[in-house]
Length: 158
Image 1: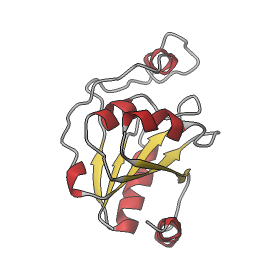
Image 2: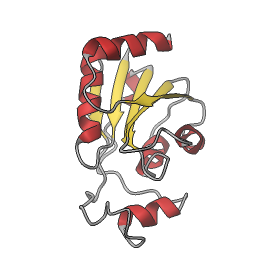
Image 3: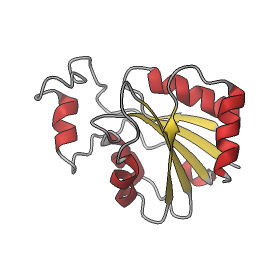
């Protein structure tokens, strides 16, 4: 398997999970960064006027990326990580998927969350990556051993 672990992390939690996964699968690691980093105020989900709240209310929102340098073309399997926002993936993941050609690639989702599962993340991301196979993965909360991560990936039969 020629894997890329691409992730968006607003607070560092998903970054830790992505790094552990990349180590476990021997994959390359790429951070999806917004052109304008999120502040704590932007991430205040209790404020209906916060940046994240406004973006998540608009399914067509596409926050700009800091770069489009992800080495997607050289990988067959993309593990795509994110924090769960409002029961789905943040819209910056749609921006990322729409910036590259994922035709023929398998995208395996993984996420971190304080209280919900992946929800309808896959359904919300599929239109942004036509030609790709998007697979619901799992939550990678807490400390996961390399053995646990390897067992999960092997169980996917990619």
